[in-house]
Length: 330
Picture 1 (tube, rainbow, N blue to C red):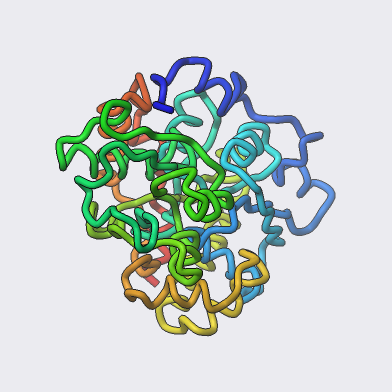
Picture 2 (cartoon, rainbow, N blue to C red):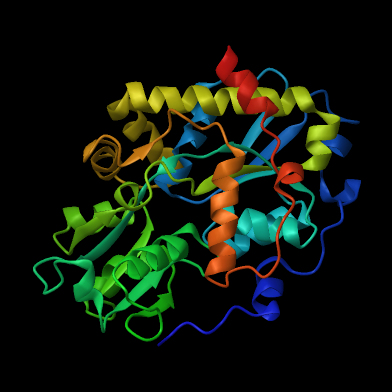
């Protein structure tokens, strides 16, 4: 099954047509704080190692707000929650963040979730031993609006392979990918960890290439924050960013402890997360979460190149790096 071209209907399906700020009845903290001394910030995330700094919720006693991590099962579900104001902040794929912004959703990108962190995984013991061997195979990605789609298209283009002609691309929920590979429904998948590590440890799959070796220090997921929270509670956003940056440092310095803490949020066995954090040590990194304009420029250029987007976002208005810069200056 080949991927069809991205249409306006696809974009609307992902983020809907709305983008206006929601009313107080939707529980935006700026409204809730009128009757509460401390606003609650709901932080959306998926159970991925990309979002491992969510362990800040267990490590930091936030003074100015209450952190409420909210786990989602899929990217469309998370995107809809951001659009509708059901969460005030969320870790989201950068292409999803750009798409939300393009549709008028009032969010800004304030911090990265990680760098690197994905793997192109194929069947263990199978015939695929190089990128060229992917010809004729079907490869799964988590979303058309994903960094993994961009990564796969980059990988294929580097070998002169064309998506839809030489390699079929299908969308699939990440939790289904390991089983789909084991039963030969797909020839491989590219997605955020820990699913590549799961396939390795179950002897189902082998890593054909890590994303860090395709696009060194690439961005993938980033922290989106609604503009109304930034306007009403800048000190809350700063404390949240400070806590996430500190959590990133903690992961790098205490990998075993981070793997143990992750279970509460990611629902994975610690040994799987430990494998991601140590095989190799830079498989995914959290030591430089400062977003740079160039990171977004490269991502947006690839989205246009591969027909994931049809229009440009004003990146200077989307990026708000002051909180991250302050956190790293401390």
